[in-house]
Length: 105
Image (cartoon, rainbow, N blue to C red; front, top):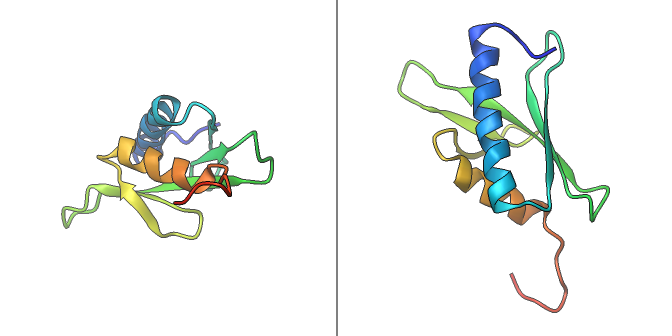
């Protein structure tokens, strides 16, 4: 069950916005929001074309000092502000995309 406290509801809202952005920006990826009791809510993103490529995105919500909050990689590094889910979707897509050796990045 997804969390029902205000922090969890905000996290779910941000992750759902990112999931919607991924559907637009990277329809080849599969994204599912998971919540585990007593733990943070995550967006598990996979590339079905590469079964082992996946990432768990979480959220650091807004802070009193004016930080709007951030989407975070599983190791805690920021991806993009929660106010920019399309930007975050492009970054996640770039990381989880298949790389064709015949093209340059």
